[in-house]
Length: 340
Image (cartoon, rainbow, N blue to C red):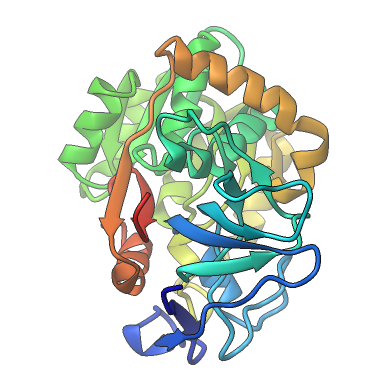
């Protein structure tokens, strides 16, 4: 059996993560005990939430311990099994982390169809990002035909799916992304009505012009100056699902400028806005089957698409993750760890 390559958390970042926060190790491949399975990880999902788990600040998820393997969703193949529910050769969705091989007692595993054309889709459009888009938009945003939906990070794995579902529901959809290339893709590939570049000095004014009837649903996963531009344009009874605030993940203090909390509270009150945060792991038990049915049908019909940004080689995971937090990825970021 090959050795197990892995990345562990060497130190906690102060501000933006650096390569020095990760340590690459080569260790013996673990041996499955009673009831356990050994998984050869093939694909690793890199996601913004991982930045939060690198910190020891209080949060909804347990921090990664120093010297512990970086966590993350994986798709892999069972190489050895002492668990009657799984057999050698099974394709599984797991939480295998940043490493070649991982052990599981089976409770966190989901068996995937062996004929799945794109196994990495279980980490994107058919997995956590797709589910996050589906739940936030349909259960909190509740878009109606003819309404205006604005989506932050619209070229990313969550935002791109949000916009496509909103279009299926008959809404007008405006995306926000970083750069002309991303904006073109948002319109030409994902079918948004328009997309605005948040790097444009005239962004706030152009957003106002793009939504003459105001904004009914704003899907928030960025924060910062994007939310500042959106806030005054929210209609009465607007809905704002919040699944992330990537603009502030590397912040080490409060933002510059005046205290804007009274402004936010006043607009929320006057406009009777529903602004609701959610953590998608809370909803798997009750909703994932419905999401899987809906999304599988849309994907099969070609109504919802995904772009994957695939990085080859586990050794490139830290640089890819750092680039993700800087907005350098294009689509769902996935590391191809090893062979089929």
